[in-house]
Each structure stands twice: as structure tokens, then as C-alpha cells.
Length: 285
Image 1 (spheres, rainbow, N blue to C red):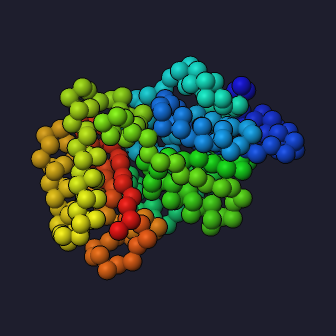
Image 2: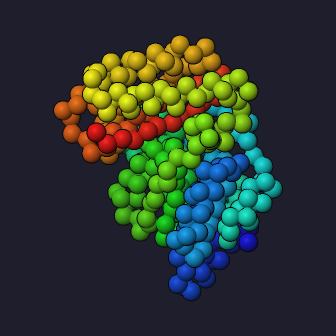
């Protein structure tokens, strides 16, 4: 396995592989890998001849009061997992290598980046899109793999690739969960034992809404209210950013069953203590 921290060096290496006709797959991460990341790597491994894992805790997607400085990092652990999963290249740049001293350009996707997480984390998706585009330009992948736990991020990146005519296939891979249903996340490390147990209320609230939507016995407003109430009644839920029911294709808000949607996204973001957790379920009705 090759490890690079400099843009020019990995570019030169990737260009050699591309001249050899190798298909390049990219799995972008912020490190502290878990089984969800491993599933992305395996998907890339099954479809590409060269698998690149990027590890970069991107400062531009964190707000001033968010957890950039304490975000979990363990490169040696990540390296061991990458080797086990058959990663060919790790790209692990420093922030100054990615952005330089006078970086002024960015990518901002309108509309779908302003709802859900975008509403509560201003500038977050601008930071995400900008760094992902930089990674695409540096690594020149044929395919890139993202987890659907971050469904809004996946949709926004797909839109960026489409609108900017990038020659990259973007794949979304299903959310990987713990045995009890909690979506795997690097931030789960922050949870105490009692918080971890009560964090399942997020998954249960999504399932309750999905059940009610399928049965169609309640209005969408009543379904959202009942699921929010479930969250509000749990004393470990410190804050609810949103509990939304939206069209999974364009994130437009759904308020009635008569509105057309090929797939419905039920998504929420909550704080368990100081830890922000997100999750979603997509259903057909």
C-alpha cells in the first residue's frame, strides 16, 4: 500500500495508473474508520482496480462551535484497517496542503444544501463540496463511494457532479448499523453507556414514521409530530435540529400523500448530550 500526503506526488502516481488503463475508485473519509467505511472500501474493491482512501478532517465543513479539534483521529488504526481491506493508496494531506495560505474559491450548491443539515450548519455543505471537488481533481477517480447515512451529502455531491459535468460515477451505499440498529458513526465514540443506549430513540422514531407512512392512517403532519414527541420525551435528547419527511429525489418538503414522490426520505438530526447524530430511512409508498 502506498501512502501520500502531498498533492503533486499522488497526482503523478495516479496518472501512471490511469495510463495503464486502471479504474480508480475513491472512498473519501475523515478517518477513524468503522464498518460503514469498510463496506464502502469493499464496494470500491469489487468494482475498481485501484482503491484510494482519503483521510482528511476537513476544517472548512465545521462551524466555529463544532467539534473539529476533538474529532476522533487515529491514523495507525485507520492504516491497519485499510491494509486489511485491500486499499491500494491512502491520501492523508494536512490542511495547509489542501488549501494553501490564500484559498478563495469554493463550491456552493443552491437549494438542496439549505434544508435539513444545511439549515442548521451554515456553510457545512459548501465546505464538503469544495473539498470533495478538490479530491476529485487531485485523485481523478472513475468512481466515488459515499454512505447513505449522510443522504443529503450524497445527493448534493451527485448534483455537483451532474451540474459541473464531472466524468465520475457517484455511488451511494446503504447505511451500516450496529446489531441494535444504531447507524455507525465516528461520533458514536463520544457517547457514554447510557447515552449510547438512549441514542436508539433516533432510529425508533424514524421507524415509527415509516410505519405510519406506509399505513397512511395519519396525516404527514401528525406523523412528524408523533415521532418528534418520541424524541422530546427522551431525557437524553438535548436538542432536535429537525425531523423531516421529504422527497428523496430533490429534498422538497412533503406535506400530503397526493404529492408525487418515487421515494420518501425520513430524516432527523438530534443531539444526545453534546453529540450530534443523524440518520434516515428511505421508503416507497
